[in-house]
Structure formats: C-alpha cells, structure tokens
Length: 228
Image 1 (cartoon, rainbow, N blue to C red):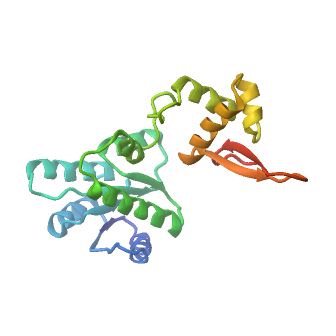
Image 2: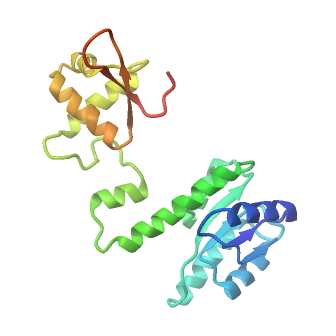
Image 3: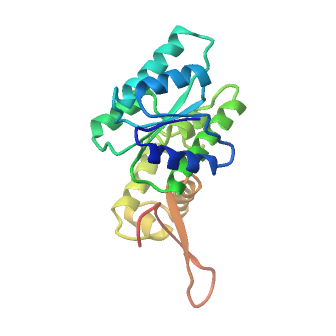
C-alpha cells in the first residue's frame, strides 16, 4: 500500500494504522502528487490511501492520472484507492466516487474506522477472487443495496408488498410486532412475518425479543440502526 498525505506526521500515523491491520503492508509514502505518481510507477501498490489536498495537485487528479496510466498499459495491475481527507464538500465526494474510489474517510477518524475499511477492501477482493460468473445477488452485495422494489426477492415475496412493509417500519416511531405490521398494512400475520424475517436476514431490519409473563417471547422489529 502507498500512503499519500502532505503532512509528514499524519502520513506516519496512517502508516502505523495500516501496519497494525492483518494482511496489509505499507510499501511507500508520498507527500505530494508528483511523488505519489512516481512511487506508484516504481512500487506498483495495489491500494493507495490518498489525501485530496496536496501541495501540487489534488488527490482526484492523482487518481485520474493513475487510471490513465492503467489504460495506456493494459498489462499494468490496477490500483484501488481510499480517500482520507478533511474535504467535506459533497461535490468532491461525488467526484471521488466517479473517479473510482472505494471509499472516502473524513478526517479526523479513528484507527478502527480505517481498519474497518481496509478489511472491507480485503473482503471485496476475496469475493471477486471466488466469483466466476456473478449472480445479481453477488453484484448487489458488492455495490450495496438497491432501491426498494428493485431487489431480487425470494420466491413468493412480491416487490409491492415488500415496499409496503418497509414503509410501515420506517414510519413507525419504534419497534413493532408482526401482528402490528399486519394490521397497519391490511396483511395476514403470517405474510407480514415472512417479509419482516426476510428483512432481518438481509440486514435491513433488527429484531429484539420482548419477554412476557408466560409463553414464547414476542419478536419486535425495527429498521436497522434506529435508536430505541
């Protein structure tokens, strides 16, 4: 990995974070765009941690130059990029995405935040290595969840009902049971629970158990990440 940051101490800190992550090793450090391009040409890293603000050119142009070099030399291995920057402008984030960045971390961030992204990179590479022909669900996992209604649903589940159940969950202020969801959407309890459990399996919904005096605990559902 190549670490690119104009601040010598920050570059050193990021290098230490990387070195503490299993499976990753820093092969070089650069403090401006020209150094980064020379280092990439010489060292051929497979990943670059790239700042936006550099003294001679911005990080976006560095990544564009790296992509252009790959196009000129079909035998050259491609390099992935993670932006690590204080730049918060949404236009820059969008430009980074269009340039082919895997992610965009805004400074300051913790060691665990960077390591989480590095592990995500490793997971993506492992997934690509295992794939021959990609199924739609493989593509969805790599690119992220598609909009409601466009997801590939299991047999027996309908897109319009999935949208209805998800909307009920999002509009409900707290958690709710399958019976409450069924009543709100004029569905059968069995049908509502099938969709709710599907959302749990795909990570969009969290489930908790509410224990009463007797009998089995009640399963309560809410959108993942929503506070109580």
